[in-house]
Image (cartoon, rainbow, N blue to C red; front, side, top):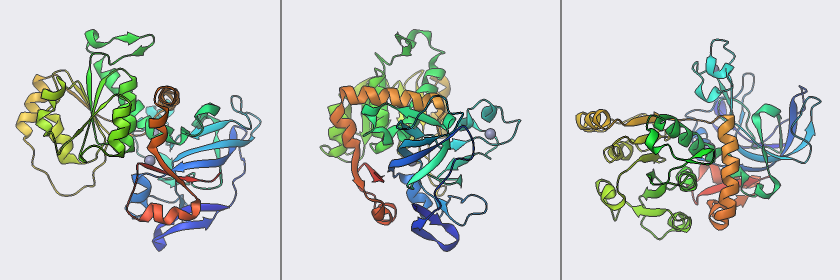
Length: 370
Ligand SMILES: [Zn+2]
Ligand SMILES: [Zn+2]
């Protein structure tokens, strides 16, 4: 069957012939791939800076943002059946019995670094006609969400980020409002840095959680991204109109910053506008390289005197996948056009080299195997 793979030893990217996978364990299912999203991680792997094939393989099958339909189930699969739509998670635990995170099914917090990641690190991904996965790493997708469920994995970044923010803000009992079971951001202000797919999905997540939500991005409005942001009732602010330091004048106290740009200069500049008792979530991964000047004394004073929390977050756990499916249902109900507009276009697999190697365009491009 066809798969999209990188062969680092040959510096090659493209379609290869890959053996069809079979079930090897009773808790596995075989999934017919429908959609696979392409993101910056895939494009970086195609520049061979990282992305390791599994041991014994010359190539790594790409793809970690997938949605598919179950076509075969093992004897011990209990909660999924043939015909169900599912999304897989990405990271698989390390084998170290002393890694309490992996032993607790929280491999997103793995402490050894010996985890593997499908489509990224030492494990084949999902950009292929079908794949096999254990039931525990799959999240069920309700039928009415199948056209947007390829966004689940990138959305989990925001879900885990928000969960970390709530965990930190448990220290502030007066802002720990609840809306039923869920904490709510009502009365609080959030800033999203960047309006790529992670930023837009972050804005939707914060808005759905009740925050007054602002997205700060370089391009002037109107543009396709600002249209999506404004249509969900969040506010889009261009850095070309409003300098970062003026944001608190526009929006009031900055209670939460969700960084989704991966540009350290902007990310650290934004730390200076974080409000008292605020929480800052970093999600971007800048390339190592040139040092940037920052006013470290002022930033450290602000962090200490303002009781600020700065949290990095990567990957996602099972709870974040469930939260993402639940939020996708909310987005689809309240902002159907906006969530559909995040998916720029579906392409046949034969277009993979252009999508992976040429200049990035649109918001979220998807390879469709259906
Ligand atoms: Zn991705
Ligand atoms: Zn581990």
